[in-house]
Structures are given as structure tokens and as C-alpha cells.
Image 1 (cartoon, rainbow, N blue to C red):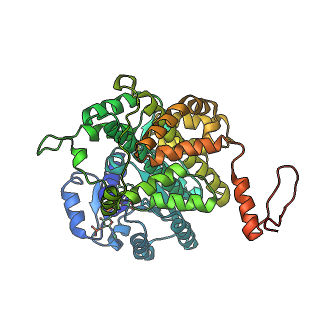
Image 2 (image 1 turned 135 degrees about the vertical axis):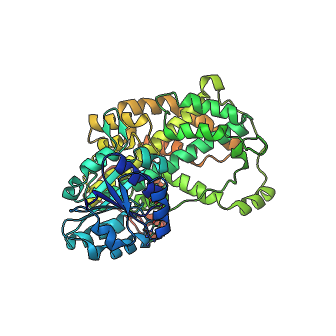
Image 3 (image 1 turned 30 degrees about the vertical axis):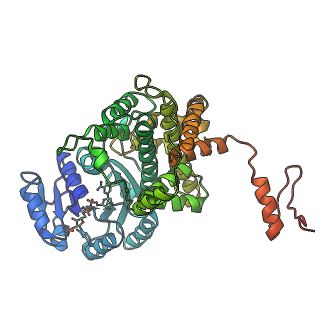
Amino acid sequence: MTKAHFGLVGLGVMGENLVLNAERNGFSSVVYNRTYSKTQSFLLGRGADKNISGAIDIEEFVQKLDRPRRILMMVKAGPATDAVIKQISPFLQEGDLLIDGGNAQFSDTERRVAELESQSFGYIGMGVSGGAKGAFEGPSMMPGGTKSSYEAIENLLNKMAAQVEDGPCVSYIGPGGSGHFVKTVHNGIEYGIEQILAESYDLMKRVCGMKGEQIADVFGFWNNTEELSSYLVEITEICLRKKDPEDGDDLVEKIMDKAGQKGTGLWTVISALELGASVPTIYSSLNARVMSSMKSQRENAESILARPSLRPFDLGSVSDGMSPLMDAVVLATIASYAQGMDLLKLASSEYNYELHLPSIAQIWKGGCIIRSRLLKRIQDAFNDDPNLTNLVLDPWFANQVSSRLPGLAKVVAGAAESGIPLPCLSSSLDYLNSYRTARLPQNLVQAMRDCFGSHTYQRVDRDGSFHTEWLG
Ligand code: NBP
């Protein structure tokens, strides 16, 4: 019997679509799922009449694969991934390759690469973005691990990935857990942009009294601009136009205002804190989800802590794309990308990942949730200057900051007077204002620390470490 080129473990939403993608691109496949009935229904449904077969157990699955075996695991991150590795390892042979396409924590991937390679197997930790549709049509993929392992699947991944005008949205990221690290940061940026768009919707609704269709028109306008054209703006417009089939009202208004999180946003912030990266926009988006989940507390507090009455302010008109608001959204989006790229740079140096930022921008240009036209500018910025300290110092981005900062400041100030929370827009303003301020007030913080704890301080006028008897 001819053996299959590609194996897939885990027929969840992602696995099912990825294996159909591989098969469509000419790779005969075999699938295994813990619950066999799911395999059967897949083979009778979307997997029917395709070059895909099923296996009832893991041994049969492994035996049905061509050598060296290429096996993609699409199971939940954490214990489920370890369980699958434990189950499958006894049947693998030297040179076989396991690919983890789940949202693993990068430190887990570091451990697994070392463990599997010590047994002469290959192991690739690969971030996959694009949801079910992307998985089927062409996702954005971030594979990390040993280069020779990547080379064994390069052709497969190049064909499966989303394609943009200048190539596929996949390339080798770096060693160890770098692929999953990059995917984690991708998700952190995604958290930021989602919250920024939600805040702009809230302002249009509360300050301007606009309804779903009108707000959707603004997102439609934004999606035609170089600065904001993106998948997330596109789907925001779609969400805002959706009606509740029961009464024809805007469906978005019927949705409970509590947002969940599965961990990658949290991991981004933890990594940033560990590495000393400044990511306030991303952190604020995470905190906004935490705050949103405190629904009953917020309801109670609203009845006790009176909020100021609304003081309308100028957010621009629909026909000019809500000009100051667009400034605010553009700059906060740039801040979210800038913080993510900065975190990648710090991680690259700390973990010796040797990340190539233009290639990462290329991977994110198609297939993934944060795909946007801005990524071409980001790619160009890091191509033009590989040592660029921060994205906002690139001439095109610096010009965006100087021309749009008054708009962002106006929006944040106006919302503050009306008691409207803007966690991401306001923290982005603080980020940009802090970053462009040569002298911050931390001199006084240093004085206090030396006063109560003799922590010493440095001086601006001479070298050395100093201590003062402040209370004497
Ligand atoms: P699901 O949770 O929908 O499916 C996971 C599959 O893994 C199930 O079919 C399950 O089988 C199977 N599985 C096997 Br095989 N062994 C398992 C075990 N020991 N424990 C638990 N399940 C086992 O996942 P998904 O939404 O397709 O996502 C898969 C991975 O991809 C996750 O890490 C996710 O974070 C990541 N991801 C998801 C998306 C997305 O948009 N959904 C995007 C990007 C990445 P069963 O039928 O017996 O339960």
C-alpha cells in the first residue's frame, strides 16, 4: 500500500482544515483523532473522496506514513500535547519529525525540542494563525526549531501557507521555541488592536450617538486607507452590520460585554515584564478583558460612583473618516505593533533566536488575524534599517506620530472629561509621550528610593553611584 506524505493528529477545527489544505496541495494524508467517531465522520464528510485515510490507533497512524514521517499535532496546548507526544514517540524512528501547531507556551517548546532531539527525532514548534478559514485557505505560519527539521517541511509549508504578492506567509523563524514565541507576540498585538477598535466603536456610539450601520461606514472608510486597511477592521465592519434575526436590531448590542482570554496575551505581558520591554498598549488590552469580566462589580460600582455627564466633543464626521478618531486609532495601532516588534528584538537577543523582523512582518502580511497594509511599511522599516531601535523612529512612522498625536490627545482628553474609559488609546498616548521625552521624573523616584532604602542614584553631571543622608 502507498504510504501517505503527511500525518495529522487532532481533528478539531484547526486540524480538519489544515489537513484538507495539505491534501489540496498534493500531500496525501492520514489522520488520527483520540475519539475515533470524529475521524469516521470527517472521512465521510469533508474528508470524503480525498487522498486522506484514517487510523483507528496511533500505531496504525504511524505505520501508514512515508519516512521520514512528518506529523502535525493540532491539539490543545499543555498536557494534551505532552500526552500525544508520549503516545506517539514509541512508534517513531530516527529522523521522523513532529510539528506542534498548537498555541504552546514557548518554554514548553524549548523543553520538547531538547527532549525529542535527544531521541534523534525532529521537533518543530509552529505558531499558526488565521482561524478555521485561514487554516483551510492558507494560514500564516511561524515555524521554529532546528533548521534541518524545518527544511524537511519547507516545501509543504510554502504550499500550505497564505500567499501574498511577494511570497508565502511562512519562513524559518529560528531555533527552539522561537516560532511559538513569535506567535505569542502576534496574539498580544492582536489583543491590542481588537481593544483599540472596540474603544473607537464605543466613542462613536456614546459621544456621537451613532448606530451600527453608521459606525460600520466609518470602519469601511478606514479599511480603504493605507494606515488602517486590515483584516480586523474589515471584520469589525461586518460584525457591526449584523442584525439579530429575531428583531432586526444590531446584534453586537445584544452581546454580553465580557471578553475571555486563553493565555497568549497574558504570556506576552509576562515575557515583556521579564525582558524589560515596554508594552503598555498590549498590557492595557489584557487588563481591559480582565475588567470586562468583572461585570457584576461594575454594575454595582456604577450605581455608587457617579460618572460625569457626557460632554460632547468633536470626533470628526463620517465623510472625513472621523478625523481625530482615526488619528487616535492609527497611532494606537502603530504603538501596538511597535511594542510587539520591540519585544521580539529583546527576546531575540536574550534567547539567541536571531529573529529577522522583516521576515516576520512578511509572514504576518497574509493569512493571520493581524494582517494589514501597515505590515508592508513595518517590513520596509526594518529592511531599511536592521538596527532600528523602535518602529516609531522610522521616518514614515515618525511622520505619522508627529502629524496624528494632536488627534490622539484630543480624543483621550475629551473622553476623560466624560468618564469614558479608553485603556488602549490613553496608554498609547502615554507610551508615545514617554518615549519622546528625554527627561522623565524618575529622578525624583530615585531620590525617594535612596531616601528610604539607601538604593543610591546616578547623577547627570558626573559618573559614579551616590548616596545622600536625606533625613539627616
Ligand atoms: P480543538 O480543541 O477543537 O481540538 C483538539 C483535538 O485534539 C480534538 O479533536 C481532540 O480529540 C484531539 N486530541 C487528541 Br488526538 N489527543 C488529545 C488529548 N490527549 N487531549 C485532548 N485532546 C486531544 O482544538 P482546535 O481549536 O482545533 O485547536 C488546536 C490547537 O490549535 C490549539 O492549541 C489551539 O490553541 C491552536 N489554535 C487554534 C486556533 C483557532 O482559531 N481555533 C487558531 C490557531 C491556533 P477529541 O475529539 O477526542 O476531543
